[in-house]
Every structure is written in C-alpha cells, then in structure tokens.
Image (tube, rainbow, N blue to C red):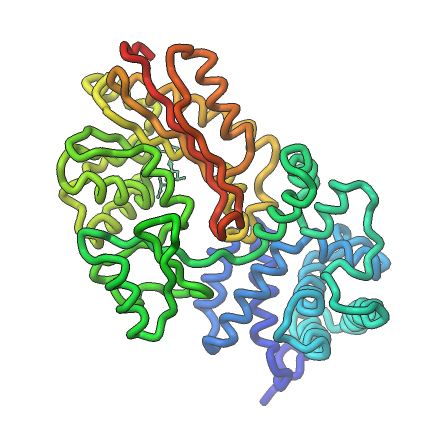
Length: 458
Ligand SMILES: C[S@@+](CC[C@H](N)C(=O)[O-])C[C@H]1O[C@@H](n2cnc3c(N)ncnc32)[C@H](O)[C@@H]1O
C-alpha cells in the first residue's frame, strides 16, 4: 500500500486517531462537538468498535482541554495556547489516551500520535510529539499508583485554580462552584460533569407498563432497571448510540428522558380537563408527559419559537400516539399575550422550561463548559425573566406556573424567582427543587412552582 502524506499506512489505529483530531480541529473552529463527530464518522468507514473509540477520545479530549493544556505547558517549550493549533490538538489526542484511556496502551498512544503527525503534514514535528508524550509517560512512571490524570503536575495552591485545573473546568465556574457548594460537593459536581450519564427512559402508560417493557428489553438481551423514585422510569446502564432499534421504540412504548427531567411535570401536577400551556416545548419531552397525564381530557398547547424544533415535538407526539391531544404553535412566547389576547387569564397551568446555560447537563455536551461564560449567563437571565413576565398574565386567577431549567446557576434559578416575586408580591413560591448532576445518577435541574393570586392581574 502507498504511504499517505508520509505516514506509514500500517500503523494500527491511525484512522481513528486522525478522525478524533479532525473533530478537535472542527470544535476549536466553532463547531458543536456532537455535530462535528457525527459528520466525521459519516465520512469514514470505521468499524463499530473504532467508532466507539473515536467518540470516547474526541469527547474526552474536548472536555479535558484545560488539564491537557497544563500537561503541554509542563513539558513543551511553548505554552499550549501559543502552539500551532494542529499540533496542540494532536498532542491532546495523544495525552488524553495516556492520562485517561483504560483501553489504549501507552505505547499505542505515543506511536499513533507520531504517525498522525506525519499524516497531517507535521512530519518535522514528529520528534517533538514523541519527546513531549514520552516525557509525560516517564514523569508518571516514577509515581506510585493508582494515578489520577493530574498526578505528576505541580498543582496551584488556590482551591478554585486547583479544582478548575484538575477537573478541566473554566476558572469562573470553578470559582463559582466553591461559593455555592462545600469543596467535596463541588468536586462531586466536577466528576459528575465528566462522567457520561446513564440512559433513562419514560414509559408511555397509554401503550405499555414498566414491567412489560422491562421484560421486552430482557428478551432482547438489553439490561434495564426500574428507578425507585420515578414510577415510569427505566434506566439502561451503559447504553448509547442509535436507540431506534431497541424494542418498543417504533411502537411508542417509551421516550428518552432523564430521571430528574421526569420530576418536573409532577410539580406542575396537570389534571385531566385542565387547559395547559407548555411555553418552551421542544423537543417535547415534558409536553408528551403532560399529555399522558391529561389522558385526552383537557387542552394542551405546545409553543416554541423554533418551527424546526417544534417539528420534533410533532414527531415525538406522533410516535407516542398523542398527536390529537397537543396543539402546536410556533411563536415567541414573549409575544403570546399580544398575539393571542384571548389567552390572557385562561390557563390553569403553564410550564416554562426556559432556555438556559445547561450547566446541569455538562456530561452530555463535551464542549458546553467552554461555551458558557458569565456574560452568557447574564444575557440568559434577562431572557428568562422576560419570559416569566410574559407568561404570567396568561394564568387564570389561582393558576400555577412551573419555571424550570437544566442548570445549577443561582442567577438562572432562584434569583429569577426572587426578582419576579419582588415585582409581584401577591404571587407565591409554593415549591422548588434543585437537583445536582450526579445526585441520584441524573442530570442537574431546577424547578419552582409559583401560584398566581386569586385575582391575577400580572
Ligand atoms: C430547555 S428547551 C425545552 C425542553 C422541553 N421542555 C423538553 O422537555 O423537551 C428550551 C426551548 O425553548 C425554546 N425557546 C427559546 N426561547 C423561546 C421563546 N422566546 N419563546 C418560545 N420558545 C423559546 C427553544 O427553541 C427550546 O426548544
């Protein structure tokens, strides 16, 4: 076989590392990690096993960017941020395997990285790649195990700097975490935010029950466990990839929904016969859960400002057999009172699952921690407050609204509720809950139920 760009074609595992490197390059250029990965995997012809490895290495290296940079800084002559990006991401591919991967031998991590340097036109830097990676390996070989990925680095003494470096969190988030939580809980948050979460499902009670679905999974050799706190939840440990071939998917027996996300609609407590608005509905996880509770009695409006995302609500509702029970409307929820004045004072309950920073779901989105900034939080807080103000007049006197997010940032959660209550002193906070990521195995969520006054003039 001919050599490709100077690399030796027989280096086993080179194709998958090349694919990981391309994903890292794309994400550094602004692409979303899941979209970049999907695109690269679609172009190659990797085996299922190699695709699994690429996913693990790409997501892991993106997530651990700060710690991997610290290893570069400790062993290279030029700090990571000033390295040419192709070299920096190549070193990340190699370092991630050395520090984190249980299935890749260190020798393979080094040899594939050196071969990759040649493949991507950095042949003259191959000795540098070799030297840096081997220096890291030698440094760690001197230490007694078991080793943490940061063992061998000189760590900062400042607690926030140390937390941020060891767990690859942006400095602002590590600092904030230590003001919200005791040190052990902040570290638990950091660990959970780097651990791929379990796959949780919600059973569709109109089509099956949890025991029957569990039996159907067992018959197909799929491990599924009921969750004690959620009556309709099953969890599938270690499951990922394409779920559409699992038993019951096409028949609408279940949908994917995190265990804590399943706890939000019970706080809204929809009752058959009620008129309900889901004001930020797509992709419809909670809309369909409300529809299940109404059992065809009542009126349910699913609003989302994105027409494309609203189509996903339609598809999900159709698969679950609920299309007749849900009315869809693509508009900005802030405009509802002016677009539909007849809706003012008309809803028994409103679910407001606002756009948020997603700090409770960092484990699901490898690049999210590098996208969220304090400026974005401030902007989101403004949007969240204005959405709450906009839907409040739609409630009937004594009606209820559940404000929900998948973040743990107090500015997006309790502070928004406090600001609303300050301006609307007759409203009451009836219940609120913060779920932290990892706690009980699920994502981080927040939900607060507010009751409108008997004469709602919000
Ligand atoms: C957190 S997601 C909702 C998740 C959904 N409730 C579920 O459980 O599947 C937030 C949604 O709000 C929508 N959104 C953002 N701003 C909006 C606005 N001003 N009006 C209506 N929808 C909006 C987004 O398009 C997005 O689909």
